[in-house]
Image (cartoon, rainbow, N blue to C red):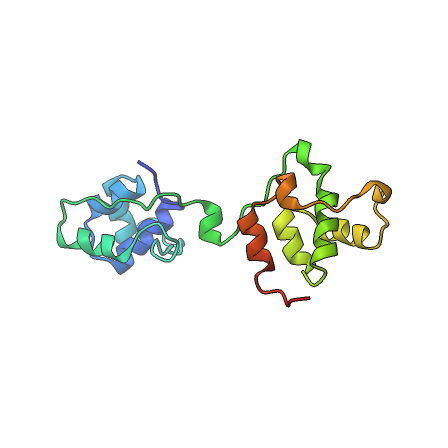
Length: 173
């Protein structure tokens, strides 16, 4: 069974904010019931700030309410909870080595056909950097003589739906 991120902090929050049994909290957090008892008695973990498993997406309110009604039921964690999803970070876009040489062509194509697209949107779409975009814009890129504008979808750097989403709010030329 998958354990929650920061199990002690999650246990502190569950003790303070729910009426779950110690065994339920211990099983969910992967801790011993006596450790949960010590946290509740404030013998240990007095300096730990509770982590809300509802706001972090690890549990739903309905799941907690279901388990509060019956002490013999078990809490189940929501799938796919990662540190990045809890912290609100997006994973960076990985571009295979074989496709990285095509990135300047894709940037050039976007700059040619969508000049109003911001650098930030291009960075997110293609997984590139602002200095790279600026060097292609100003033609100061080391390989600028060989850059040919080519569609990032045809190059396999992004999907058509990603491109459509990026150009959705842009003004019409």
